[in-house]
Image: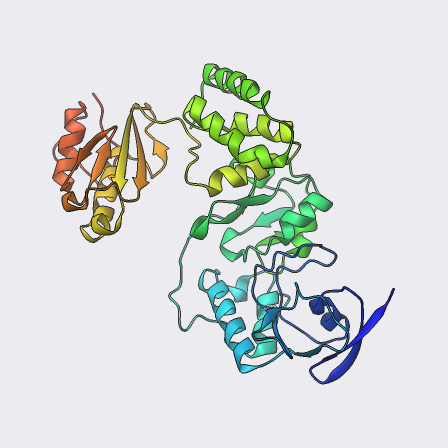
Length: 213
Length: 176
């Protein structure tokens, strides 16, 4: 495997040729916010819009999860433009997120909290109106608790359910109605879910959580 | 919304016929769903499962596509289809109030059908007669300048009686 050398935030790092920039940075201990990225996936969804970086010679910021590393690349994970893009994307995610950290099972292990900490974003919505959806928690499965109000639609659970589970999860609806659902929107307990719990391990937030934990 | 055994049988039979004309490529998904809707007037879950099996994809993927596009309806249409215009002009003229009226009177939400299958409710974009806003189209007939009282009047013309003094918010229609 050929390796390439690039510079991220002034640090020289090695990465495998063809690898996406996001993974090269994360493996070298340089944090770039991300939610929808899944290691090894060929065509990243690039849906969360949080992994923007500046690359020297590029006219505008690009998503690190879709950008392959190139020899001699000079990357900066922070810039006023990047911060602005990421902050807006983050605030949009929060605008329909049921913020209930104090009683959330993922409190202190939540990716949103981590991003807020790393980038010094407040964990509240300032510029946008909050979208209250009052969605029902699905408590029907013996092992998984699904709270759609906390879902960030990253798609990790859909992917892992197909890789390791029974493939009952998918996206449904469009726009504000977009949601993670089972066939016919039946509760998880009746969906043919085998309760492997893989989705609770990949969920970056408190949307899919294990019951015993 | 529960389908009768007869409806399920017809749906499966028709879907089977349609699938015979399509190869097992994922790219055929939308044309198949369109054909099913053309034949049945809607795309029932049983048909989606059948399509998923034919194409070798998870059933939830078919559901995903069918719920993404407005063109697919998942429940059988009512005997009378009520379409409330939500175009720009109707929106400005209080189309949402009219829609709420229909919802309250019929006791159903948008894209649903009353339990007796008499009425189904939909929201549509512009129907092209903005001077008459707010507009409701029932079956093929256009009704302009609709008011909440007009909603009751229209329902009355279909033989639905709303008892005086018993009209509460969220109350289902009393049918005689």
